[in-house]
Image (cartoon, rainbow, N blue to C red; front, side, top):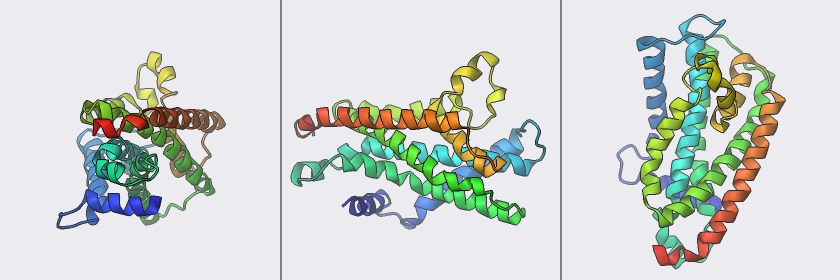
Length: 251
């Protein structure tokens, strides 16, 4: 049933557009291209110990691609219950699936960024490291973490519709408050310790280390993210189920 909901949600997202589902890949491609151009050529950034534009572009995409995935999954998950109010009112099914489907939509930008990275590395003659085999585990951690946030925000959005309206602004703040576009060493020393525990940054680093450095993510990052992801998922699910009986009255 979840796969069916995924296809319906994805189809509805681009219903009536001329390019249809092509936008699912074209949109993240455009964003990746814009930010790569801005931060590689207009306001060029550099990495400590690595010179050249190409290494920076690979580093940028390997962090910004997962960010696009997380923000897309969180936005879709937050709007999932309200946008499917007709299903909830007229069909008996587990509405918990809706935020999970919204979270899964975020996998599309992630796959697009992986394809872009693999293409650039292949052109540059860079072979992927065996460390990339850990990436499916990182994806699972992301799905649990964003899914838990999706449970919480989608239920809240039923009662406070401003939630989905303010979310883009909050995500923009989070983007620039997280070391996504810049190395964490670019931030003031006093903030680096705090930022190193930002779950969005930790997830981005868990993607970057295998792709860019060819090394496994630090064990503490994987363990920390595992605890945060599972705790967020279980807490969000409990919150969702607590508010679920009141959904119909507010739609």
